[in-house]
Image (cartoon, rainbow, N blue to C red; front, side, top):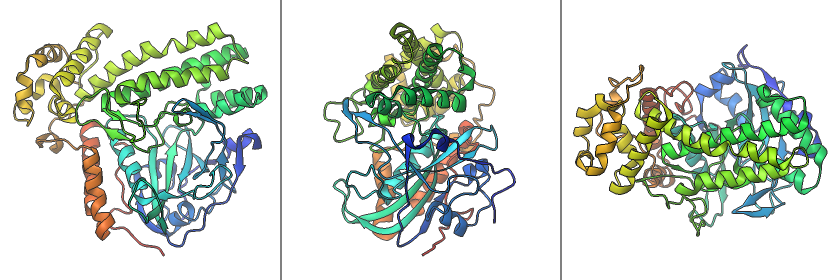
Length: 491
């Protein structure tokens, strides 16, 4: 079937010109097995009417979507990787496949790939994605979206029938191709490339395109004012993203400048982790030996990256104006962190001082007692209305700790949100849905050993239940290949 009448496509990114991308061809895979299609976000793009066979043709064989690119675009960028500059980056195993519009809010959306084959930026790698890597991204994005984090969406996962050699997985391992949905794939590293090449004209062109496409409200007629307003807006958005990560107990793992989207949307999930307990030094990547991107250092890493963006804009605006723009990061981070914590507790915000007092008290409690991170938010969602439920929790003894007294006093001063939904079956449970590393490995094991997807499907349903309970399910991770939960096969 064709896309729905609401479907609208675009070739907007192509208008930037060939300095910004390379036209590439997708890999030809020996097999196509549909493992996941995000029907909620398919409906948001007008693609929900595609049959499974049509879905595979577009998102496994990359037959162009009507009205979008005739051929995929591998985007060019540079970046600091663990603070060492790398001028040889770019889309090495992915490309921008298509652009469409969100049928609800009208925003432009990118359909980008991971594992779709080699490009000029592959650097001798095979351009593939492991099936486990694709599953991990589905789980990360689904959980983050359910917890209220502004994240890319895992749109499609197709197993592709190849055996891959990897140093961090038992090899050979199964291959897949993922399609993710984001509002942009313009990175800090995209700007860095043109600064490195001393191409001021292209910096200016990219700046104007980004503002007009993604943040038109900040347009200024003066280019220096435009550059400063852009940096301020990006700083606010990235600070909000970082605050959401911290409130969710999420560690991205690889906060290189090529992994930071200027629209402030979390994306590109490699060695991510969720905290079991609050531990500032907790890292996600085994190769992060110095803890550069540890949980507690994520805000500093984001700000460091924003300073690199500011350097790219120096040919367009004065240093003092750009530094003033960057100064918005810290107050935004603190404000948005307190707001995100209150949202996770189902409480209405008050003034900044009292919001901050509750956030500080809760953070101190989590640090001193090592209370299970997600359990604590689950137990106290709804504040004082959940006191009896918290007393039945596996963590109930911790709430008798002296460190919890300031938390309880602060919580009692806040009103629950109107749409609390405490009658939802999710809150009748003893324990919340979690996405710890042990959870992920337990889901992968039956797939790897017996091609048993039942635990993975059950976890998707669990995430969907969480999202529904918290009111974040309007396009959430309800997924799977079809409404029955059966995975069709196309060979």
